[in-house]
Length: 159
Image (tube, rainbow, N blue to C red; front, side, top):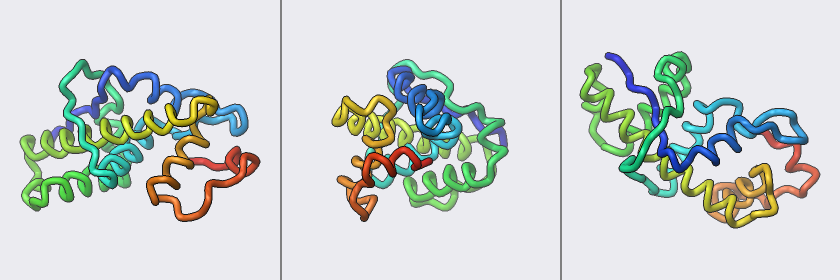
């Protein structure tokens, strides 16, 4: 079975660059270490919040399939999201049609999660790096039970 590349909508380029490539001034690293990690986080967020977006506009590469396939945890998330979304165990059969459907379902939830992340960033325009906005958004969504950490603690959080 040959897996497809993971795509994203072209309109999500800026948020992907901010979260997976831009260097945070306090940590010296990006918030998400790789685009693969961002894709997995966004897909799980999109799934949790029931936000699935069809990739009906221009798309661009988010994660090369070869990079994605080299990480068992990422593949597990792809399979988990596809299985949970379709509720059909046949989606896990090893053929190209099922592989394409798994990736397509995953991409839709990635797009939904990126839209949620973008909304959270827009809610906190003073947060140039996005870490505070994400933690606040997770808290407001009930996905982070503790109060958002103080500003001095936020600088040490790594996703």
